[in-house]
Length: 379
Image (cartoon, rainbow, N blue to C red; front, side, top):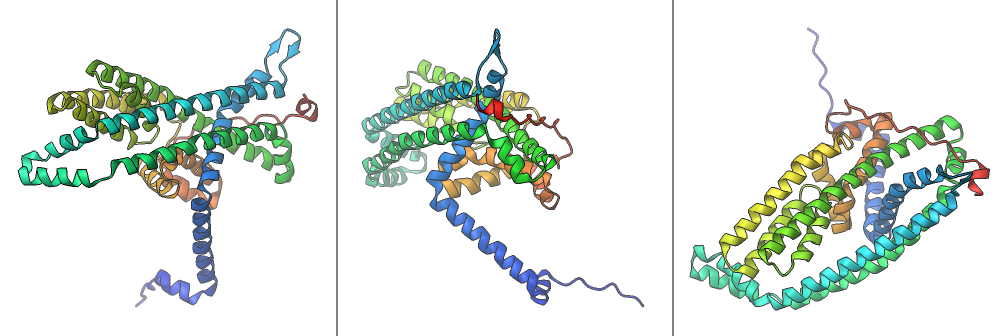
């Protein structure tokens, strides 16, 4: 009687084949080295990743400006790049100044409400008994809030240095942009491979730009609405809460929840009554649900095609590696990884796992831009 051979376990195949064992060991070592470098050079890499995203946002605009004509004259590419760099620099420095100003306001207000916030949080546990409330209050008072605030202020001070570094990176990327198609063709070896790589890069830029533009618009509207609710409620930190909501909404899935809880907590600490705080919580929650769960997906369309579970995994991984900045960069990085893996047959399985529908629906590919000639580069 014929019997079906029992497949060998994975560990037996590794033991019987030394080549596979060596390959597996090399993959583990390489992953550990890459992870170590990502953690050790996180300040530089976060700034570089942010600069690449900003550059991709401005690249299409520069190309469009370069095709415009003012009568018989055409706007030179270098002039469009310089204007774009100045605009990016002004926007980043202004945004950094606004964030630092609001952080300073939050720190000062937190110090003034320190005792009141401790009592308000302890009163939430009053339903569990006076002993529990007293224990929570004693624990809250044992926490050195000023030390934490000094730490936050010190970390916020590095924001300006990171902004300057991002501006420098963006400037160098604008300079390299002129010669990038020629370098890519030389590296690829033939025009067909260069066109394929350029198409992949164009698809990544297209999808990331769509995601960031929609997310920025929805986050701005949400921040304004939260600011309006906080102003109507008479909260001292109305502007800071609006800015914080705008920023946190860039963090997928988790950011809107954290922003809603923080607004409700601030309202409860200042007002001191649970009823108004719950009303504010409900109002902000409705705003977040409508904008985040209805309007955002409707505007986003099929631009991302990312798995929700994959987004959570990416968020957890990059937050562990790069902290809070990694949360903001997790989705663009995941989009790039999925598109690259989809174009490589041996890695297509990873792209299918990261995608929402197994790559069954595909967007029209972005046509590759024709490489500029030396005459255009010289303009």
